[in-house]
Image (cartoon, rainbow, N blue to C red; front, top):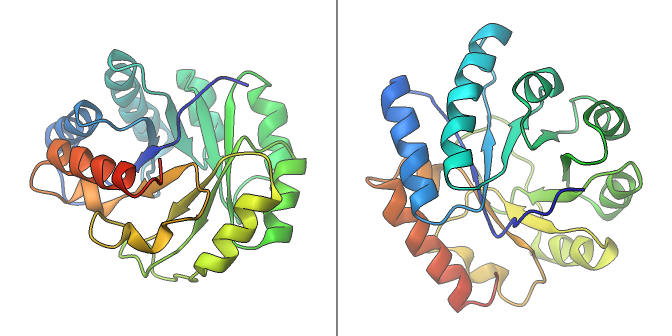
Length: 211
């Protein structure tokens, strides 16, 4: 497994942006201190996804930040991305691991302790746990309690990140829970300056002892 730092995990959302603005915002976020980057595109054709992923990968490599492709193992393989993230309705984790190989990162979503243990046993390298708060990026949001998040962190030996509606003003609720990091979309993507937003979020998380 490739080494990676999940402390500030940024998941993209290109909705409403030109490609130029989208790529600029990603670079600003990387400059601001993002440590792991996930490209998430639900509505692009395979050809469009690969084309955009290649451009994003070029930027990510400039800052030595691993690129994770959401859901699409084929796209991840096509551009030789550092990893892939699979959700509950995506390809089985074990299958993704088999296709990606042992040297690539495979992440998974988990909302319960049994789910987390199964993901680990199937070969996941890290977990995204949530949603901690309601989120604007998904129509159906199933909330995960901080108690469940803590239980998951203690149940598996792989990094577990909190995700779902998190920003610098509400992550206090995570204090004392042994998470490996935080995953955000809107807190960085929709900020006036993604670079400053990333810096402030990271600083706040460090102050709270979360990362």
